[in-house]
Image (tube, rainbow, N blue to C red):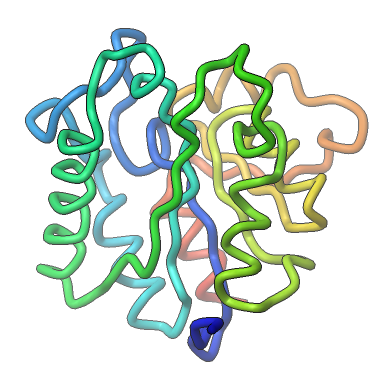
Length: 186
């Protein structure tokens, strides 16, 4: 049975580099999971304004044996607890646990994680904001017919410098807080 969306609809966030600090060594524990300035409040603001806030994240550290599901769950509990402290909520978190060469359909840039969220909420992804920091986030959004939005945190500055083709017109914001403010003004 599909879950009910809130009045403003769905927004999908990437995790590492958008909500929390990314690491070339992978984020492997709740202690290493450190939110970026303003990101927790931005999620709470979106939630309180009527968005159904979700997270779609590649987590190849699972396939690589760098962390386990218990550690990942602890990170997500920390995220939810911090957002709840600002009277907001993260409604759903989906992850791709596969490695880059596993050939799955859920690892971004493929849109499988986004489609999973669409099925869960029984909604089309047309124009749903998908906020990420990498080209693969933007490509997954575009493939699903969603609205790609880039933030300059994480890998965002490098990604912005390389935008071309259809992605050259992608909305770009300094961070999640600024992107959320733009969405809230619509």
